[in-house]
Length: 271
Figure 1: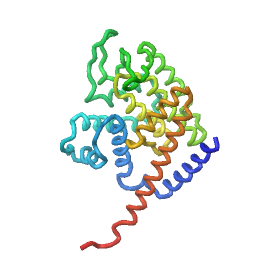
Figure 2: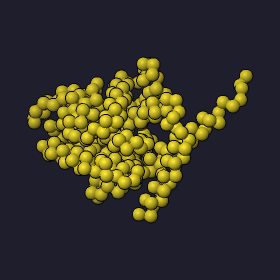
Figure 3: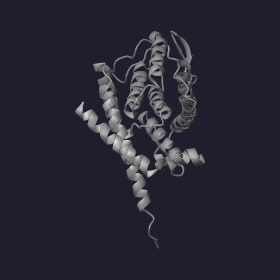
Figure 4: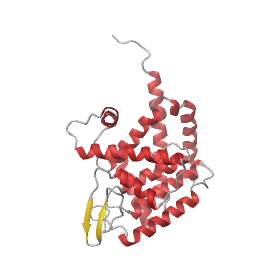
């Protein structure tokens, strides 16, 4: 508990500095921050596009030479899903089963498709829940039976909506968003796009509370997966909450450092 309190004290101080610097008021800041959220989230799932390549794709329609088309489609779809979520956050749209399906459909719009299994036919580009089993990586444990998914997602939505407006502090609201992320990806409702949709749900809750959205950094993928596994095995959200608090702190420090560095550049002529 002492360690938790210490990191949140630092997060509060860094948030104060972030706001004092006025980063949100900087030209196109929110746009480029969104691009970074998208780039890191798709990279967790295998996209090889860099921040600069993603910016060129979004702003100028330029594809990265030699990079797979699917990586470009993943980024475009996730950007559109984030823009949709950002708009819905301003409207305070409740988290419902249909809303989550809509988010996943946007995430999987260009890379999903129809799947035929013994349990029936479903379309992952439409946000349909899976009708088959899925495993957590090579040799990993299987996720819950697909027949239980609709009820579990409905229960999760009910729990989130009952708490969405009850957070007394930013720490409470962040922890709710981290828990939403953890629980949705643990239920694993879809055949694909679960990680991206769960990170999007986390950021959606942060958008609703006007919080600085937390990233999951591509270079921290192994620690991310380890934290998810530890929380599942212990049936305790604390390991994942702690990981995400560290990611949030990393986000804040990176943003303020980059902003200060940019302000100190360009003060001399170069010939």
